[in-house]
Amino acid sequence: MVRVLLGALAAGVITGLARQRGMLSASGQWAAFFLGVFSAAAGWVWASLLVAFFVSATALTRWRGEEKLRRTARTVPRAAERTAYQVIANGGAFVLLALLFLRSGSERWALGALGALAAAAADTWSTEVGTLFGGAPRSIWMARVVPVGMSGGVTFVGTLAGLAGAACIAALGTALLLLPFARIAAIVTVAGFAGCIGDSLLGGAFQSKRYCDRCKEWTERRVHPCGYRTKHRAGFYWVTNDLVNLSATGVGAAVAMVIGRGFKA
Image 1 (cartoon, one colour):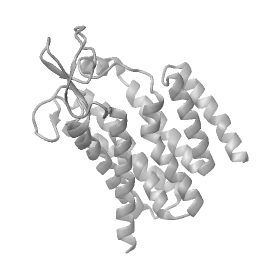
Image 2: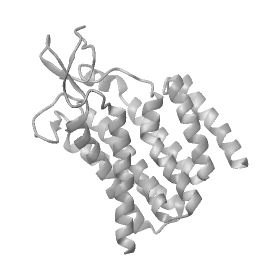
Image 3: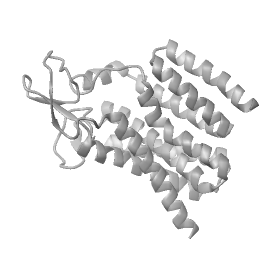
């Protein structure tokens, strides 16, 4: 109970500052607060990992933020603040699995939690670095050039950045949890990278994509910068980027647990 209360205090301070600096929307602040409280209930290590992910993700998003916004202005809706959907999509699976680890003590849940967070980190690092330095992205399905920021688009630089993001969470989580470093870090890195690739595959295949008839351009914006209302042309209209991100963390968690079980066997 003491840990929960202290976690609530820390979460309140951190999310309040994030809200004040425009990092979180009102709904995002509440979502991040509750995830922070639940992660603290699971243990300080889990709370520390969540904070590390949030800080690194926010720093990367803000790094040369205006330049990235210009590059993706015609493709991605402009939204500087993280909403509740975005917060839960990136951290919800991690916190749930951390609580399951607290309840059972089974290493598989710890692996799943680390895999989920590694996938979220890999996707964030891949997107932010790839947008700046990756050049023209190509569809992971068809290898044709797609607009910068379009779901399913990948670059070599962004892919390497995603691998680095997964490895960072894997190394930090393994060290803090005092798990067998080489084995667990390798499993979590592979799982996180798999989640990142899964994000691109799912986004490219199923996420809603729209078309501006006036500019003859593909986009994910409902209203194009030209002012013309775009039309849904591909994917499923109800599949959003947040849903794809949530699915990617699920892929990361599942891969970590499956590989971990294989090693035990």
